[in-house]
Length: 202
Image (cartoon, rainbow, N blue to C red; front, side, top):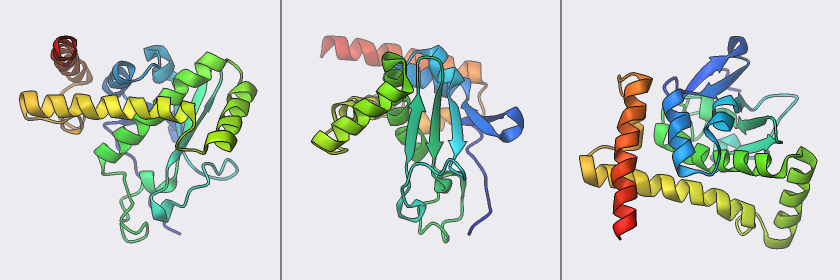
């Protein structure tokens, strides 16, 4: 097994001695725009690399992996498979994403939408029951809560495409730049203003 672990340092910051991660301020602000999650909930959401004994989600990391979000009205956690914390393309069959900010941000924009669901339902038991029911009835991809979460990624993509057309940049380029977190937030805020104005007139 590959023991090489790294993380996208301009997306995440380690907390509690590296036992988990938090989203950096500019990333948290970005997700507050493209999802229904509150900024405070995003800022306190803990991000984990999948490991024992909490070996979730049950996706194959060598086939692309994925993530799962758990939470309630007070806390939320997102668990990513190991390939999101590795640059070992050979070991993960080309699916190592630690140095792929686009893959990180797109999947995270989906998962952060589930943070809003956790807050909405308040109880992790109720949260899980509703998800299990919807998966059993509709299947994963057609479950209403998954469709809602996909909307976060869709809006993220639309916003990124707007920035590319408007300024010749992409969201990953902004996030991975040498600018301060405050400068990144201001940049995203300005682009969001032009994006929102365009949507209002279209």
